Image (tube, rainbow, N blue to C red; front, top):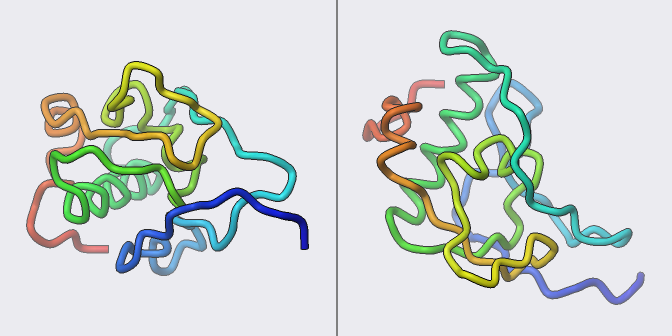
Length: 125
């Protein structure tokens, strides 16, 4: 096994969305290199399964980290990239999109506007 970069594993964070096969976390660092964090276009419309998955991921982020900055760690880049630049933004000026240690933070105003259901106490799957 190659020497993989250190990666914080967020204990207690949901591994994915039940019944969908969609993952929220990764088990180990990518041996081919860190997947960059970058804003991806989001085509999911409210009411679609994709929108519910994004809302569920944001719900997990909010209820795990709240308004505090958090390390990217083992959070799935594909999921983060659909929220990045909108609901989730860099928490540091010298943000490194290729670092598992990069700090992110939820832009609460934007997140509440786009995914109000993510801030409910319970998210029905």
